Image 1 (tube, each protein chain N blue to C red):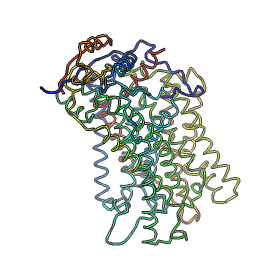
Image 2 (cartoon, rainbow over the protein chains, first blue to last red):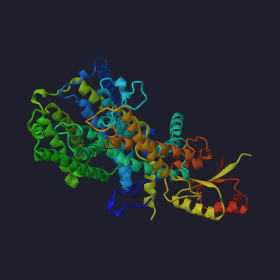
Image 3 (cartoon, rainbow over the protein chains, first blue to last red):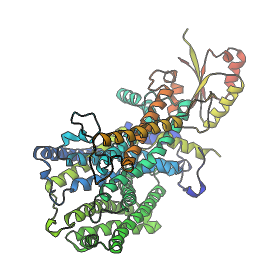
Image 4 (cartoon, rainbow over the protein chains, first blue to last red):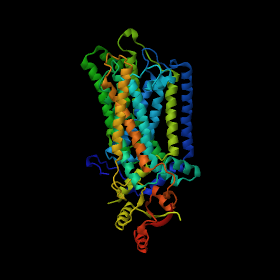
Amino acid sequence: MIEGNAILQTDVPNPARAGLTGPAMTRTVADIPLAHRLPRFWWVAFVAGGMGVLLLFVAIGWLFLRGVGVWGINRPVAWGFAIVNFVWWIGIGHAGTFISAILLLLYQDWRTSISRFTEAMTLFAVACAGIYPILHLGRPQFLYWLLPYPDTMGVWPQFRSPLVWDVFAVSTYATVSLLFWYIGLLPDLATMRRLARTRWQARLYGLMSLGWRGDAVHWADYERLYRTLAGLAAPLVVSVHSIVGLDFAVALLPGWHSTIFPPYFVGGAIFSGFSMVLTLVIPLRRWYHLEALITTRHLELMAKVLMVTGWVVIYGYFSEFYEAWRAGNIFDRYMAVNRAVGPYAPWFWLLIACNVLSPQVLWRRRWRCNPAVLFAVALAVNAGMWIERFVIVITSLHRDFIPAAWGMFTPTRWDIATLAGTIGLFVALLFLFLRFVPAISMSEMRGWLTREERP
Amino acid sequence: MSPRRLALSFDSADALRSACERLHQAGFSSFEALLPHAMPAFDETGRPGRPGIPAIIVGAGAFGALAGFLLQAIGAHDYPANSGGRPVFSWPSFIPITFELGVLTAVIVGIVAFLWRAGLPNYHHPAFAGSACDRAVIDRYVVLLRAEDPALATDWSRDFIGELGAVSVEEVAA
């Protein structure tokens, strides 16, 4: 590997300096799933997530029985919680590939500590996201109509529609993220096989590791494969949320029909993704005593990414209002006024508080490095990004052009149950991951530790 | 008698590197190195170059993108829905899916090519037979020599092996 660009070097304390050696690191990381420490904590969290999954099943079952009318959607707001939640989850699912692909290509060693975990988070967030558009179809049993297949009706999907682009973008992103994650896991699964304490563990990890043995020839190909995949995943991350942005921008509605959407959405996605990473990493590193591997410096760097992407989002907000004023379109101007003082104004101002004001706390190094403060900011940003999508979707739809066609959107209990259900699914999957998969890449960490040991 | 192999374990990457160089100089032709992590710019056998994984990925990506583009062009021609007055062959709107399918094909083919070349999955290998060389997936750097390697036949080579500084030397069944 070419040693990194000096400008991009970040002085993350290498765990080797703290006296952590390869075998000790391997033990620390591998023991989380193998020894299953903290069983009570794990079970409480997993069962809480599992309850959410049950709620999700009930909500989806009711939806299948009664149709999408159980949600609060109607004319004019036909895109309700389903789309808000979809965009929120898919945005959260952007941090993983950003960290593992883009930061890998930029030689940011500090990503090693958090990449595996955030990639898993990405997968689960994308899984949660993917549920919504399918449910929102109304007739989800015809999901396959979205794909080009030789049907007897002679109909093809509308390839000019961003909604069809979404099908390809999200399914490609889910597949590539899963494969990238799994390929990254191979050497670690072999380590887990070797360290397994029971026969079923050895069998399971052995099977999943595909017989990886660390052959130097394999490693050479593996490194090339991994970097090339990262090179492909990097533009993919940008493409996915750009296409989600185009879902809005291609529509003619005031507040949506704007070229700012793709970059604004990508910035927002990484912003929300990092806030979710911080929300999860801060408690977990404490509970599992991973402070030597995920240091305060890591948290600080993530806080800085949060600030930078936060300013991209702020520019997006500014641009929306500036364009509404500058272009002089009466409908766009009304949309801007309606957001700030209309019936959904409290949500808009809450959004400003969460996404614009709260990250400014991080200008002070002392607060940026304080896990409690950072955790609070991350929670605020998570909520803020959800509200942002709510404001974008609802305020544009509910009052568009003709006042006679205006209306209001009120979520039903089933809207809320479905959102809570996917949060439960996310938590349940995350804890299954912690239970069975090493949460930090041991092989990459080993490479990092040995690089430090050499003069 | 079944072929046997000699597993030399080292406790650092540098020890492995120098051992491999000395083995090469001494005329050992075929041996494998097992590493606990990627070691860039390390090629223990100096075997002749094959078309690289990146080249395969680029080729597959180009194929996938082309196929994806044709899929859309054919679909739009076969079922000419008028959408916003766009022409039937409205190629700019085909770009996103072309890109996505190119990436998807490239990634899947790249991974399959990697596994194919590495001979994985492979659950039977001498590396799994010995306790010392199986530590390569944790912290040891292991060299696997073929016991029938002609260079290993003499007493001199036995001594030479001893001088390489291995933490342990173990015979494993192949």
